[in-house]
Image (tube, rainbow, N blue to C red):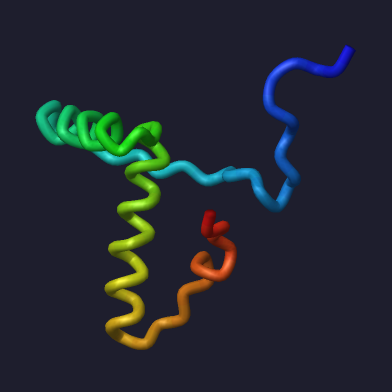
Amino acid sequence: MAGRGRPSKKAEDKKVESLFIRLEQAEKQAFQDAAKISGAPLSVWVRERLRQAAIKELEAVGHQIEFFKKIKWE
């Protein structure tokens, strides 16, 4: 019988860093509501929005965007 659950990710695909931020309850609730509306888990929603903001700001100053190459566009 095959193992249950999702197959393990390759080492290069695993996310190993964490970012902890302090929020007001209303901010967190708004982020949770927006994530739910989009159909994405909160962490995915936040990560996608942070990536968009970083790309915009880094491109504006001609800075190389290393993580941009690794994003899997589906």
